Length: 291
Image (cartoon, rainbow, N blue to C red; front, side, top):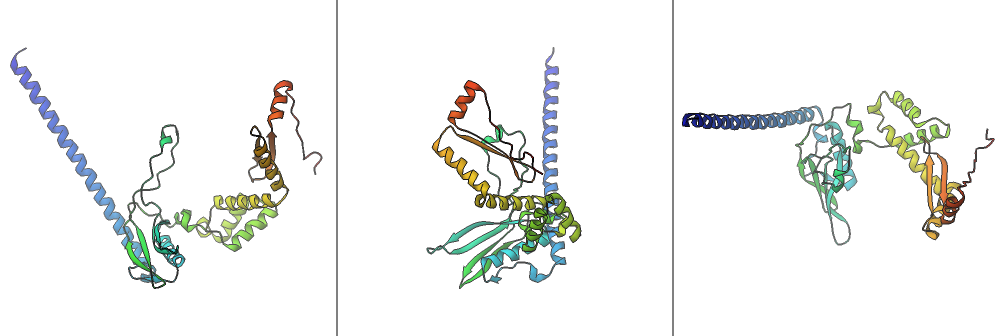
């Protein structure tokens, strides 16, 4: 093989590298252009929404509120119109424990910290934080909470009107709704059926103000409180006391789809030893001949 063949191969490899570099630059430029287009679309969307709502409903630097809760509800109402959820972020307190300033930010603010257990997790949770900068900062001055910073831009697209009711800060159970849920539960109506009935009554999920998970969580919390006060609470206290007395004591409670207790299992150290030698189990059926 002569020297010219080596030269030809070298030239071809250089041309190939140059082509790959140019292709990489083109893809990089394309990504930059797409990012700029997405950011411009976000700004246009926010400007369009702002043009459709009242100017008084948009936060502005210099606004004052009597309480920090009033500032939170105002910013949350604004977030509902735009299509995002908010949360309470950083704050500072004075020597007497009073809050001097507070940051109310978009729920997508910041980034999720890396979890050491990610290696063993098969199905990861959906990413919910994208480093969003949208926020409103309030500062306490002369007994009033004054807006000292307001950032409009988001690092993500906001939700459509049909999805706004799913955001955490926009969901709330009113006193009238909890009364209806309690009445349906006492009447034996499952949570799913009562939720569907209330949804039809108000004309859609977006008008209800809460989800089926909120309904079930409310019933579960209520039943937990009742268990602490009733006979079931006594059983739970007994099981907890036995666990303190006997380190080998174990217990388990099984509930149905409506969070009602169906089975209770417990065993102490002596029971385990007896089962190891004899293999007998005692079961109590409290529903025998129940109508």
